[in-house]
Image 1: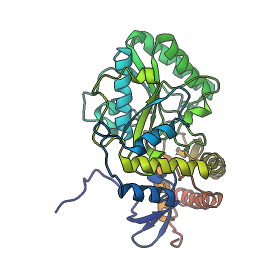
Image 2 (image 1 turned 90 degrees about the horizontal axis):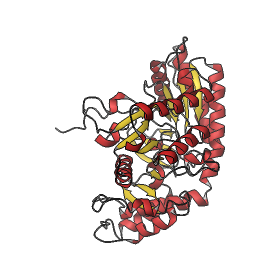
Image 3 (image 1 turned 180 degrees about the vertical axis):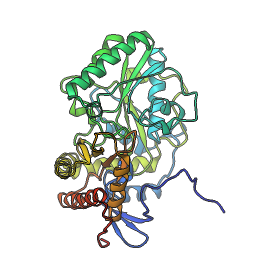
Image 4 (image 1 turned 135 degrees about the vertical axis):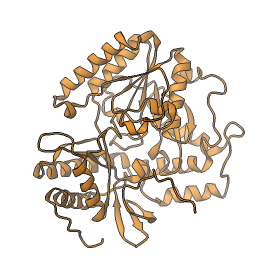
Length: 429
């Protein structure tokens, strides 16, 4: 008898039968508020009718047109449409399937374009599980342990994680930039460095936002040394943070990415990812270095076009900003009543609560209990952070104020139950 790998651990006990909007329905008929969104993937909610119709039509027309063999209209139309939302100057796209693949494509392009080997990533970043992307990932050792040696030419610099150090944000940024300079002086010579790669908000690393001064500092150093700045917007992109791209919170007048990576919410659940770069930069990719059997799949592209339609017509970027502010305020209110929550942070609909013990040390056991108590009450959540002591909320961008308030009520009850020893569960919802 065959079975799934035992390493595929479920965060919740739910056997999902169907999804609708922000809800999943289990095999037992129970309704759950899904504040995981498939780890930020179902941006327009589960089975948005516009996305469903687009995918159904495309399945009946052309399922797969391999894009180095033939071309198809959904891919061409999507490329045009992304041009409307991409940062100025990023006018060339290459499509693959997953975030990891896009990260590796960005690294390959950066090395080809600069003729340099080294990549500087930042502590706490998650860029994927494949060998190249895994070498850039430091959000947890579980993504890279036991498979070494990793891809060479990778150096890791600090990210400004102020709460972890107990510092003001300004001090954390000073430290991160000073250590980056020291890294470039001692370990990773600028003339050997192809790119910096960074998430505008650490994802698996604990939902820690960067800030304007830090990203501006990366841009300044990149320009000084001829290094490319790669922004991994796999999780933060496509409206998630209340701007279309997460880095837009910090861009001000400064040009930020040379290469932008997108995936997750781009196609509302269909596998699709891409890198975007200026045409002159993309032209440095060597012949044969970009391709793939399934990249730019016609059905996924049709779903992405529908996703962009929904985001625009339903004003979901603005909704993410509005409901994210409501969610963050509610989480802070709960934290004010529960000392076990050491920090609340986030941008838009990318919010997190970090649990600490009375001495201020990470408390993953309490975070896990809260996550399970929330699941028992009908609110699906995930943990993150290197030690698993942070609980994150990433609802679909269509979430309403009423649904945010319902989630906050369940969250408060779950925190109270997990921190008081009570295991009382509410009636099924």
